[in-house]
Image (tube, rainbow, N blue to C red; front, side, top):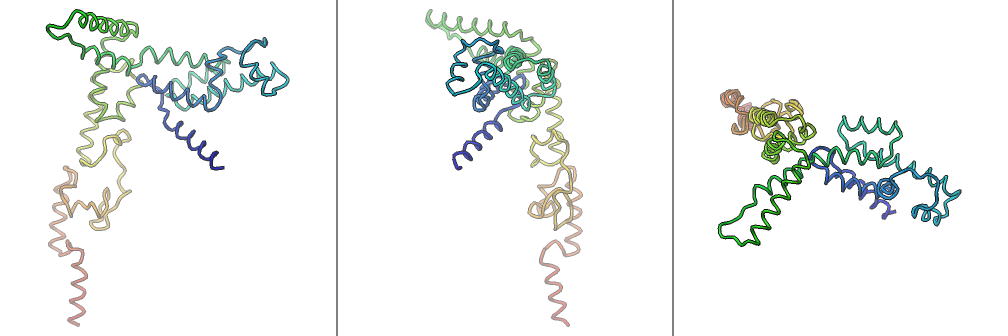
Length: 303
């Protein structure tokens, strides 16, 4: 029982780690998806038997199938292959963007095999894989031949340089895509969610679009306070009302982070408002949480 639970947990962990396929992550998506399909026992329909069996019994996989005691032989084998091929396609669907999801569904309706779907995705994403191209570009920029280097070093560096150039040529990457890749790389650490959301649009994306989205996010972050994570800004401004301060009765924070108690935590655009509220509370003698209690105690003693 514990082994089964452990296996289920492991499989769930692998599924949760599979990213949604985009123009920047084919190598990562490919390796994790293959691992998942192998775990589910369907990868063989892509790697070992990519074409639907025709009825001949000369496949090693069919011999293995027979050794398991499967009957009535080839018809059952073909049925099993079809089932696993369809299952492999279904397993890929949750990890595709909306456009590719629809395309794969159409391919499935046209009775395309899992191998055909896989190869179509590979052709679409491996050619224009942005992360691979970016890596090649960075390597190119970092290559250098120091003054006085040996002939052997010169030859090795130039060979590596030409190899990178040819790989970039074969990827058919455009100058605009290269510039966009540099911009995406610059924004990756500070604006990860924005970069991920834009990564599916790299064919039509321009550097200025990336810059504008990031700056818009940064402005909204400053307006809402420096403690607002930029990764949440794609969803729009945070809904006020989830947190309500029991001290000042304002929403957007709790009593531990009360803007009146510590004005430095208040959003810049609303700081003056909270300064006025603090002054009002001090005037009323209610800025101290124990003020009301002392006032009531004094009144009881007088009585």
